[in-house]
Amino acid sequence: MYYIHLLSRSNAQNDALLHKLIHTKLLSGSLNQDLRLPPGQKLKALEGRILELTADAKLGKGERQVRDAERNKAAKRVREGIARKQKERKRQELEEVTPSFQLY
Image 1: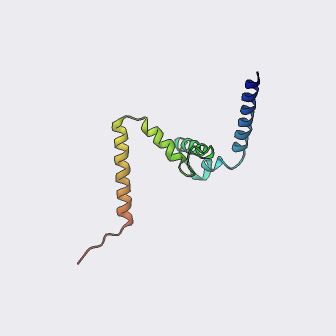
Image 2: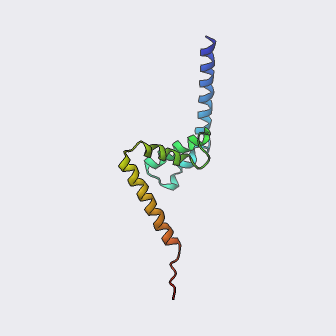
Image 3: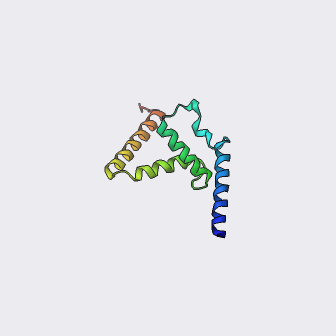
């Protein structure tokens, strides 16, 4: 009986904490309408922010952790394709940023 009382008290505390998080600005940063994010990206941002608030992920790393976990569930060929595309994008960004010097 005492154990059940502790669980219900803990659930009540968790509910109060969730209510506080939802009604403050702690979770709403990723839901900003000005960002115009697609629904899937909003969901991942919100999941990442929740991980950050619960200290399961470092600040700023929550969304990446959610995306990595999702990617790890994919088939091997899909994971390799995603990694290859990311590598290509980074290389292209680096080429755009660094000026090409010609030696005379």
